Length: 196
Image (cartoon, rainbow, N blue to C red; front, top):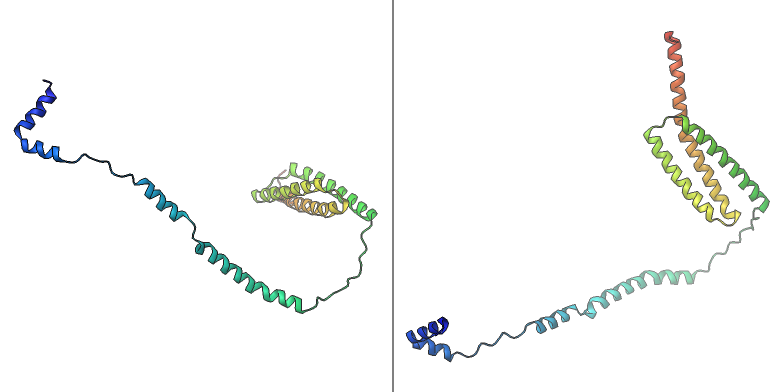
């Protein structure tokens, strides 16, 4: 007799009442599946309730109507004031072209001067940061200029570019003036102390 059967037989022989009680128990049935009920409950929670969305939307629409309706009624009640402005003459194409040429020439002159000064003058960190910002703005204006089709569109951009170049020249020129003043001060100091 195998060992397991022998142990089972030994237990039943010792305690016949236990064996009878165990045999009288009903077969074990698994617990019912709880997932379908849980899924239904979660789906019911996810369903948007109409009052949660409709009521706030209705309140917002009512508030908007209360604010805008008096303005609309007021505008309809008063006739619009019509002011006739005298017609302005459009700048002639020739004047625009002349101004564009002058701005381009000024831009080239400033760029050459800035390049010459920048190579010789020391810069403070604050001046360098300001110069970099202005150079970035000039780059943005250049980008807009590349997209301008008509001279009337390009004219304000060229004006802005020249103004930015003048700002950059001021920044670079101040550093150049400081460096020149230091050189002059050194010469004056050497002359005062008799140093060659």
